[in-house]
Image 1 (cartoon, rainbow, N blue to C red):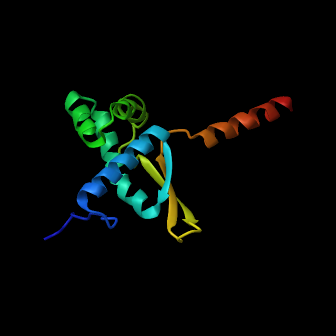
Image 2: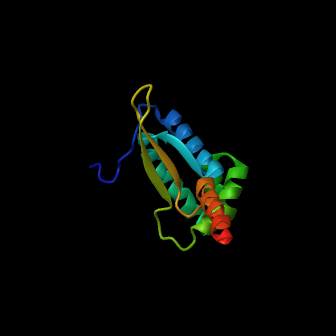
Length: 137
């Protein structure tokens, strides 16, 4: 029986799919938000959340496990030092997928995937722009 064995295959072989998902998780950790197709965003979400769970554990074995999957030491360092502590109080649901509509060239559904606990640059710039206007009143 195949209970609980759902794998989104993305029309790729296993080694190509693993490399793609690893690179998407690394990009998500590095840039805090990535724009990709909806299918890839839904496929990368479980892996990104597992990496945050490893980061919350914080021990040496968890760090080596994350490094064996991500293959980039600076990304693992950022995961364990910045992203995991920001999600320390959260019990799951570390990522958010926002649908953007269709891409013009091939009509693929596009989406943003981002960390829930991270402040993106657009969110950080909006309150800063409103502060001088309120102070002038």
